[in-house]
Image (cartoon, rainbow, N blue to C red; front, side, top):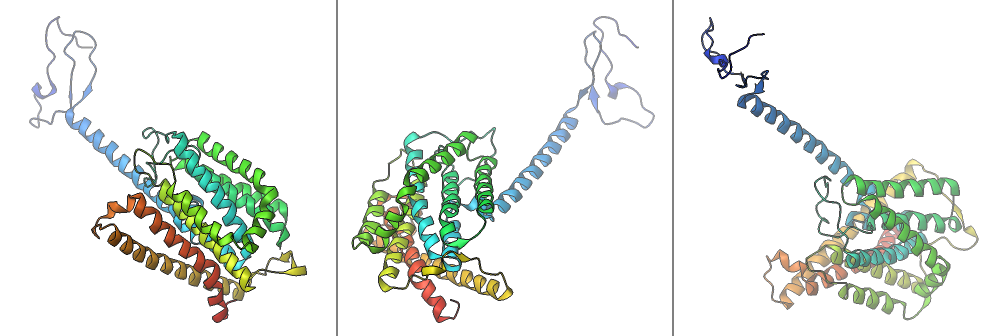
Length: 380
């Protein structure tokens, strides 16, 4: 090994003669008298940084692809507007309005309690970093409990407990499906970085406790909802009151708007089911036919089901767009807000009435008009 006297300086690679002329510098050498170690040059460091940046971009692209896929599935979409306007009405149109009514009732109660609990406890979501968040819309909301976990547990297990008296199926298979689907929703909230394990466990447990406490009164509530003369008044006034009195926060959060959406959809469905009962046309299986066998899945049955779904969703989306535009126009004019002021929608005096009116109308159309439209078109 070549050594240098103390205090001497090692020659730089560029100082050595080279038969082919000057070469690009690739490394430097330590100048101490100790054993020297090669150090990367600035160009090499820049290349490594560029490689790391490219790898990070690829990771982010992969995450965006995963996010897009998750957004297209009902697992992660549960609790979002796309779920409200597709899955629950589809149960009404293609299976049994009774089951849809029961699901909407329990789902509305559970989700309202979950949203209020979240904003009263004010426990934050997981920090980012280290968590990579794949959803930004609800990032301003608090974390515990996970209302997605609450909604999934309520819907799937309410269906499991209510369906045996209406349709014939193997209970063990239904239990497995309910546990699997609710677990997938809970895990998706952890995967997307929106909740901790504690958040989803607490959400599922709270939902289970609420179902356990209310289960003995489900039939009583159902009779009141369908037969009481004050049922439509309570169904409209109570949710609207709860929307206006929702807890205020020191910053804007989507929880009040989402809660108003849920309460409005529930109110519209409750009034619609009461109207159907008074008209004597509930579209439900009756008498000794219960529990009915599941329909055979034929090409014709599948085509009719898809036609109902597409036509029904089109009717609901059309209702949503029309009522939303009209209600915002009226409220902006009443409060003298410029039409282009999007931030005004966050004000309580505008957000609550426009969302409540919009989704109450959606609920009414779903329960009263869509099935009658199917009858006119020969789809029911």
